[in-house]
Image (tube, rainbow, N blue to C red):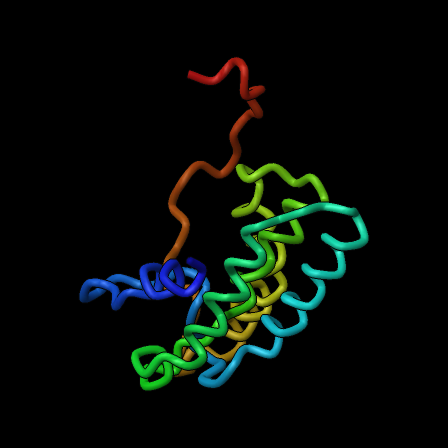
Length: 147
């Protein structure tokens, strides 16, 4: 059953589509953070006495991808985000907060990049490449009062 599920979930994506949790712009081999977080997810879940069948499925998908020609040729290995959600869920972070938590972890890199861009304006690569043009300040509205 698990093997059939792995093959179904690892189908070649349609052109221009990505498989979330696989591949990385910098790590062209296995993302070492994914190994650390995968092991940490298992330890956290075990220490909390939680049963998470999705972690078993994720581990199976990882094994399948590491042995699948499509993924190997494109260097699509699990990345840091592949396992981080398991830890967030296990410690009680609501799913709606995952994106915010992921962004908070990236903020030091974004800030460092912004600083580099300001100091070396002729650099060839800048990430992110967008300029925020939204509201400078907004009042907080409790979720139950939002439209």
